Image 1 (cartoon, one colour):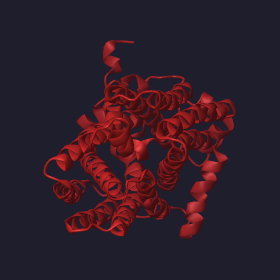
Image 2 (cartoon, rainbow, N blue to C red; image 1 turned 90 degrees about the horizontal axis):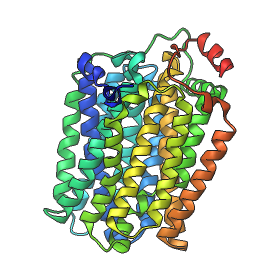
Image 3 (tube, one colour; image 1 turned 45 degrees about the horizontal axis):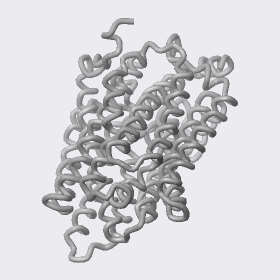
Image 4 (cartoon, rainbow, N blue to C red; image 1 turned 180 degrees about the vertical axis):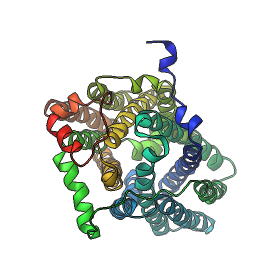
Length: 426
């Protein structure tokens, strides 16, 4: 294997103008979303002095997102995916506008922060399945790993710049200015998505009701041992070892810093993730995909244990960067496997269910770590969560042969009959 093979494969960007617009829109979205999460979390912590309140914001965003993901998944397999992305990103601007207006008030309202979070979460729930379902049409299934790596890179670039910029803006010009920059970025995103071509879903042979349509996607996941294993291993990590709700408290109380330190902590996972994404060329050639995926999620748990054991900024940054790198590798492989093993006609609904667990898991994880930190202490909460994550991931891997045997190389596109044969082989 040459050194060149370790560098990121940028062929989807080079060869697909439509994917370039989608990539730019996603990068802009992640940038402003990272800023928004830090701004809202720091604002809540400053008002309430409670990590549980910060965790509750994650729940307030996750619950409507889950409901919207159900609708978004069904709509993505029935309606033009470009139109869904356009309308949902426009609706997202309404939530950001509420954050901005609330920050202008002499005494910002906590309830309005949660309402704005709910609107933002719901809007995201519609757009994400549409984007995931559209990716194979934009790049081709043979480049899904490369597209996933580029998507991960866009998330991490935004994840680095967004939180760090938010911390600097809040410490400097102030919270209102930070929300204003976020609003400008959100309003620019639909103009990029407008340049995409029409992205109609595959024609359906039989028209069924929306509820039955969603259940059809759920049944496919339940019947596919690999997809079940992918969902379980991700939930194990997210529910047991998600540290984000503690970062404002960790930066201000454990490390003795201010908003800028908290912004650095939020940016640290993205730094590691970016390095992992830039060197992710090897993922498109890896043979034992399942083994590498399991190892990456185990590293996530270990990184949380390391975070709990240190009380300096550099130690926290390294631990969180390691967590981000592990998360990126696992996301690249998980996303490619989900898209590779799912037929086109089910991809919107399966993607929505996939994103539901990526919303529910962190929300539950943040609540869990917030309450344990209040009952015990933040370091002990992270230590318990990291150890539990390693144990749970090991148990899922041991009981899921399909997950251990998963691979991207040599797997052809599943169809109505092909998917059944591949599942039997799995």
